[in-house]
Image (cartoon, rainbow, N blue to C red; front, top):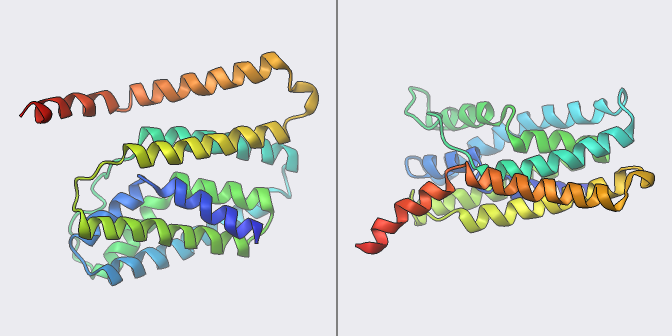
Length: 227
């Protein structure tokens, strides 16, 4: 149950503001919400099954302590990735396929190498369990993209994402730091190392936010307020 709930929570957080959630919003403005949800479900089932199998069998060749450190560090990277944000790169354009297959194929391709798929690999490696992590990440994708579908239907394309993205990013980075603290050998946990790590993470968060287009967004909002 722990693996399921953790996987569900982490994927919901990772999916907030992610490319595939943006896809869900975009498709919800063109297709029936049931079609979009079924497409998301089928794509996620197969994509995350592949991810959890890779993550589970990885532990047979790499020591568990190493996997846990890498997994914890990857959660910090996921948090920074969430701050940076995602953009659609044409995956939502019209297709000659049926709506269902358009959604399913677009989601499957968009998830390849995406942070939610990488999070699934890391979680499967950490818990060494296929079914609970697979079910948890799949459910998490449906929950998060269900929110995207609702937003796409009710609020339209233009919505504020900053608060949601920062909340998800901070949670990811916090869990990553906790994971590193528990996985790294105790003799390495000196005050300078801990302080240096926290400063490095804080500096990374600032730099990613600074150069990810957030200032430009703020500048674009000024003329609108002036009007």
